Image (cartoon, rainbow, N blue to C red; front, side):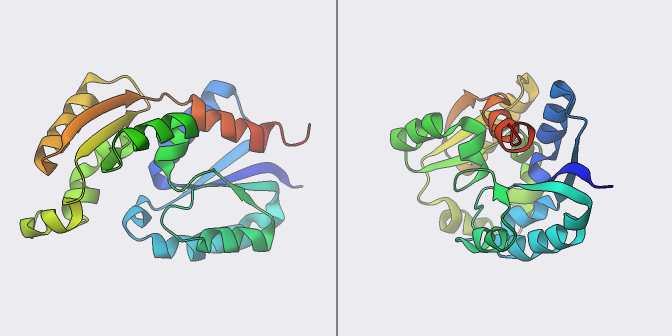
Length: 200
């Protein structure tokens, strides 16, 4: 017998999606997360998502993908179109965490903004410093961040520890600091519409 819904999600969203599942008692939803390392290798996302859909499609009534485009330049959407599967909206996770309207305001306010979420704030050392080679080649800082002027921390939880860490990361990158608390509702609302209310 088929289960109801599978969410195939980016590992960077795992904590938030599992928390939304718990808070909303979404017992009919199962979550499978791909490696968060794809954050720095978006060209690998489409094939990885395709493999998961093909593997799990026989077992579920509906599959939903917990990625935005995430730097795949439309390649992820090509994969999803083959299966009739929907994904989270927008170009990247910052947009659906903040909500399209709020993100648009932030982008208009300062186009040269580098964004962090709770996950990226926690794993900045591994995914940004080490992942981009800044720990070994600090001269790359200008190459990667020369066009940025601001770091904006989009927080999903209220945490003084994470906010302090985000400020430290902004200082490391030499960027102005901005904090915007988003909570979980923007992404939760989209998941609710796609995988909870889709039968209505």
